[in-house]
Length: 269
Ligand code: SF4
Image 1 (tube, rainbow, N blue to C red):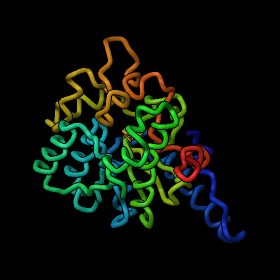
Image 2 (cartoon, rainbow, N blue to C red; image 1 turned 60 degrees about the vertical axis):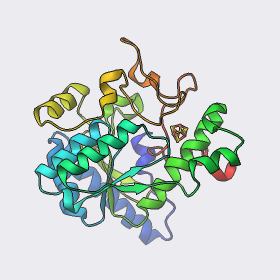
Image 3 (cartoon, rainbow, N blue to C red; image 1 turned 135 degrees about the vertical axis):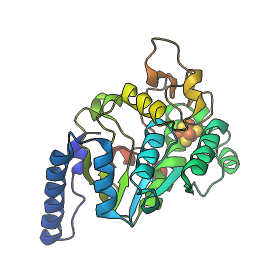
């Protein structure tokens, strides 16, 4: 996903709408420049103070998410932020346990977002597990269980917060810490964009933040609990190689731009 693609304006209804949208994009670029080298806490504070009550944190209960939940709590802003998670129906038990530990420690309740179609009904409808049906099958499954439910959930909000990092993927190398998200029609914050794994783990250990125990069992990236979607990686392997191994897929789709999402769109499948 390139920054330009992400910030591209959706077709506007009139020249006035287009001008207003462009102004918003320009203002966010200036805010991004201001916040560029600020700590994640400053970016979180800006996000919540400017966009509450319509601001949501997308929470996978991975390392980025637990760090930001702790930061929001310490900033006394957790109650002003909706925390939601995508329950695909096949999350690891350890992921649910991490959610429960976090909720208990910080005194909040994460909002569950899920597809209308249950996991079992999906298998019946598509003649078995989509994740066993090659690249097209996993794209279709991620679209139905993650992309579409998240887009529906975010509709009408003002801003959302993600755990995206520049180091995750070369296409994110220049990702701003805040930008206009044309796909969802709202502001998108990436407060930990500049952090690396070392900084994450130092924070988690220093602040005693609960984290998913699968990280200690060789899973550097944790998604759905199927043999195709998440597997442990060996020492020296690319940390992302444990996700959709051999299928050439690197994104579940929730951070893709409009054209890329169109290629996953369930209506075409
Ligand atoms: S990660 Fe796998 S099981 Fe989860 S939604 Fe995507 S394809 Fe389906």
